[in-house]
Length: 193
Image: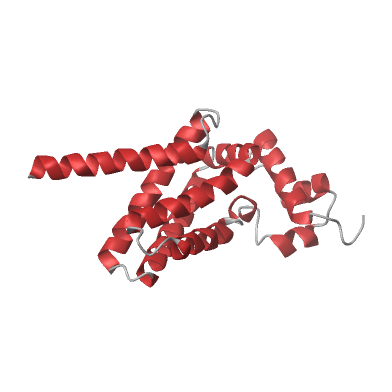
């Protein structure tokens, strides 16, 4: 086995997902993942702290992508427009990894511990979005509410995307959810007046 194998992280992710789907997350030891990937356990632990992180290791990069998109939004963008742009950028990544994202979500859906971990990662993403909005000068309450709303939109659109076989694409589903939210907010303002 060569010491410097190309794309070791990607091979480990692929092997882990395949085994999690075939055998179940809890029944898959790290040794089997590394064997299928043609790598060593030592290489695995250079890339991942544990076997859960195969599924969640990219969340830090996702947060950075979203924070960068919020920061790059035009000065005229509302807080909601800024986070919509961030989720749109994230959707591009999800769409590029389509089949892997679908497999990953199936593994998470089948395991209570992993579903809990997913909620923790979404809470972290919400915090990152709120921080990015505050850095734009948005007040704390608006930043927190906008970030939490964005996570709700992401969850609804993402679930539809997965459940409907990734057709239509995630980006239009996100846009549709934000449109519904705007319409609901406008109706609420009219009804209240």
